[in-house]
Length: 294
Image 1 (cartoon, rainbow, N blue to C red):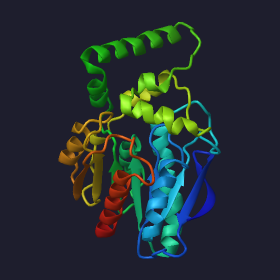
Image 2 (image 1 turned 180 degrees about the horizontal axis):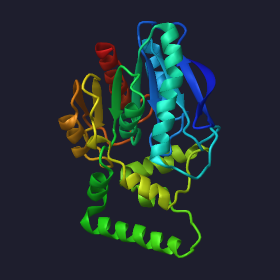
Image 3 (image 1 turned 30 degrees about the vertical axis):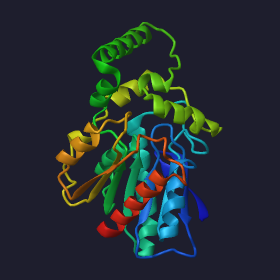
């Protein structure tokens, strides 16, 4: 696999990106697939993992780091979902020039939290032929209630309100573990600790702004304009982090051509390893669906 490094602009920040191709099997009839990372994700983790799976099948793929991550410009230790949405929309705009020159379409794929981010990005830039939402969630308050339970949800809201009151009275901003705001199930926590944290660039500290941004995130609430855009919703059937209500609800509400694929035996992310049989099955389904719908 060949990596072609590039930079592109998003709101004045130079973001680090790359096209990935297999020179021995590069099919010009296939679309360019932009693969977007989930929460705290990095280009060299899941976007490159999907590149390694898709480029041998003839695809060109594109991945990038959101502002503030790795070599991308922007304030570090900060995540606002609305800014990541803009980064995705600007990535589509950047890739569209190459796609036009090569006579290709664009497919926009999002993993984890980006499964919902790509829907909001589509509303800003609809230059894509199809969407692939993978292991995402589509109503942040609904998934928070499912993860925390009713009492935990009330305690979390009280924490947010107490922190807001403290800051309003002149208290200093303090770092908050992002997974206190976006809680992990035990299996996903183990994968994050044992696999993702081994990457020296992985991780950040968040703050109250991230909590506000997350709780406002509800991409399935407005799906006007999606009527002609095919969507694959691919989800682990045993996903304890983003429960099955998430893909099923989006599938029920999505107004355009759609397919729901549930990966039997798959949780949220513990199987995201190149040689894992579930990842091979999952990425194979994604490739087959894109070929059939683009």
